[in-house]
Image 1: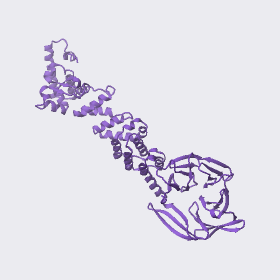
Image 2: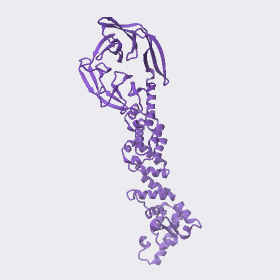
Image 3: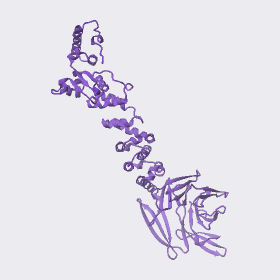
Image 4: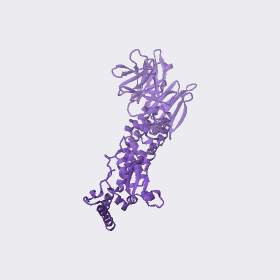
Length: 542
């Protein structure tokens, strides 16, 4: 490196070498004297600038003692021992302690430090202008950070750490995270964790997701989860689930992470979306169970005050066993009573009112339909109707009507409010497998595994709707929501266990996977977007 003569840089042109050396020493001594007697930052800056540009000048080197710093690839850079010692504890220990080989020889080797990094360090110690963010590469900036940390140059580290760590972007956040961990930068670590949380949806869609480590996710869970609102927590859980797909054996980590998340913060919609449509949740039972426990707990708390299950069993003779199962502190309890009702059979209205029905043969042409309330008092008595007494049963009910199958194509409807009895027929020659639902406007019938029939109550117009491909069996449903039921639900056990849902208002079909159901679904209770499914196993109903 060629350095201009000191005399030229400091206005000493036209003087002899001897004269210039004398003047140079004189200038240096005068500057030192001024700084000692009347120190100021301007004086110090002037002296350091003077020394920076005279590092290769032999005359100045004799006065201020020049040392040689050898970098990687054998590159050598000169500096003044006193400047290094004043500016860094690292260099002070190296160049002031008696017995140190560097102090004795005025030579120090730095085989792991490039000349570019050492030049920046020298500029910093001499208080010269440092390369800006646009003048330095990310690689050189990282090397400078590592070296300045090693040499205890906190001021230099702080300058370049601020440049390196801001702004945090999708491109650089992992590199910043790695170095923030390395240098224990707590403030930056907090910013990065919140950046990941705020941008988890975007990160989930990028290839960089695979490079996020288990330890980094653990730090977010340990430090930041309590600060997350429902939507952010939902996005972060989706982020975890996506991360689990990016590498082997990650699902166990995801399961452990989810167990630490406060899932109770999730809205009903987010929880339902996770458990019904996220493929990771559906395919991994352990993860599904973590979320489904929250669903069950939340659902039971919501419906406990109004939730009872009635079951009837015909005993020997002319008695019925009536069991009522209800919730008490999230535990199932059942009371069973035997009631004698001569040739009567029980049925519940949509509001939970219990009625007992009796059919007597009236004459050669018909039967008489009699209704008793739960106390045994006569509630209604009909005129003549034709019944198949051996197959009478109630199939569905709404808030004011109970429907009974009276033939393969007809139903009998009893209106509990108006105390009216009338017939309902399926349209055409289609055999009706069961009646699914009756609203104020329409009747819904299950014809077979592939089709349903919708009949307009007023006009009698009929429409056949095809189900989605599959072998779908209708499920008896109870809707606890206010207002009329809005959905029809079917179940398929194989090849994939799932529910088929028909949205009446939108006239559309959708699937919901049920990965941990192995038996047949026999009953389903629907409340606020959640389903309580009763599964028939070889032993009992779950």
